[in-house]
Amino acid sequence: MPETMPEKIPPPFGLALTILRSARGWSQKRLAAASGVAKSIISDFEVGRRALSRARLEALAAVLEYGPEGVDAALLCLERVRSAEDDLPPSPLGLSAAERSLVDETAAWVAKTARDVIRAKLTRQLQSAHVRKARQEAEALWERLKRYSPRDRRVLVECALEFQTWALCERLCAESEKAAAADANRALELADLALRVALRVPGEPGWRSRVQGYAWAHVGNARRVSGNLPSADEAFIRFRKLWDSGDQDDGGLLADWRVYDMEASLRREQRRFPEALELLNRALATAGRGDSALILLNKANLQADSEDHAGAVLTLQNALPLIDGQRQPRLLCVLQFNLAVSLCHLGRYIEAAELPPKVRSLAVQLGNGLDLVRVLWLEGRIAAGLRRTGEAVSTLEQVRKDFAALGIAYDAALASLDVAVLHLELGRAAEVKILAREMAPIFQAQGVHREALAALKLFCEAAEQEIATARWTRRLIVFLERARNYPDLRFEE
Image 1: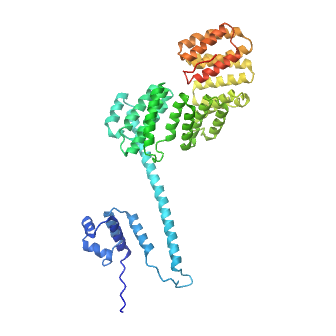
Image 2: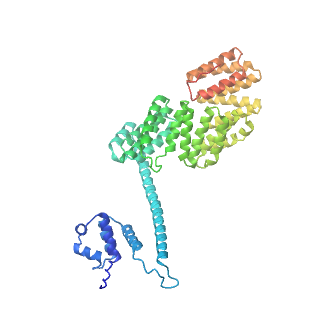
Image 3: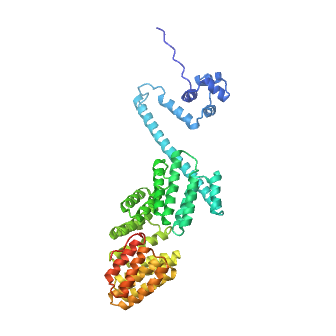
């Protein structure tokens, strides 16, 4: 039987073109029409009758919508399946077919792993660049919006496509959150504007749902600080529905810890403490180091509201190492102040006494006069706890006058009661009576809420009749501290 001649193997570039064309499901005729190269020439390239250069191969691959990396992948595939050489090594340094196969498999695995790692890294870098650019553009858009009235802002975001971006929605939400501490109406206006943007953001439904949920959380937060808890609850129900049904794999672009922390603040004000704690723990699970300190501060506030002051101290101590004092001086100031207050509640006045100098230094740095009054208040309470009564009375007298002058009636009431406790312990009923007479008109004129006002009235009546006691007055102080955030609480005599 005559030997058959071995068939000629096409060159690698020709085989690569065949692989790439076949993978797209294209015929030679279709590639010829799309590339402007004659079908006969493409056929010659593929079988090796005509030389095909790397540059020409890449040009034809581009017609097939492959980049140079697609050409490399096809060539690598051919390298892996090329005909095995003789099993016997040609020299002592040669490798058997099995060994060559092992080397090839290992090299291919390493190459694929490296490719995947590099691809993921480059993808993240490009995505981060897109995000930075979007946020920079949002900053410029916000600067433009600030020049307009609230009504004109609404018109712009509803009518101009350039304002309908996720990054501008995020930027407006941040402004709303910042405004919430001082101006509830402004916080509401900005959150509503963010929602109007969110409703017009383009993209896949899952992504749009996520953006809208983020905006609704900030609407709920603004409603909460304005005192409208039922309306805030409705907003957070909308947030939850949109957020949970949205695209969960958004790369953490919109900070989920922030919206959980906001919802926790609402649940705290509703006295739904277990739900608030669960939300804060969810927020902690996804927050970064600096953000975790803020969440822990809120968790400690929740524990203090639950009268778990030992838990609050532990939480605040865990938060301290997470704070960058240079970048977050305000957070550090508040955290150390709250830690000292919780230590006072536990009667740990010696430990608490180490903190006021640190808090005072930060308050001076921040330039907030009200912070300095609060530090003085803290120093007065610590002096009282350490039985330095004369110092405590003079300090707290100054504090109550400062709060009254600033129109902060609630804190003036608490400081006045601190002074009253000291007088009562010294048997100075007459001083307490004078103090009560000074308190009454201030609080009636400055809008202390109804239940707190009723409790203060009881104190004034008891002082007038000289039947008030230090222990009873301390109970009243505890009630007023709790009732500050829960105006529906009633004082039980």
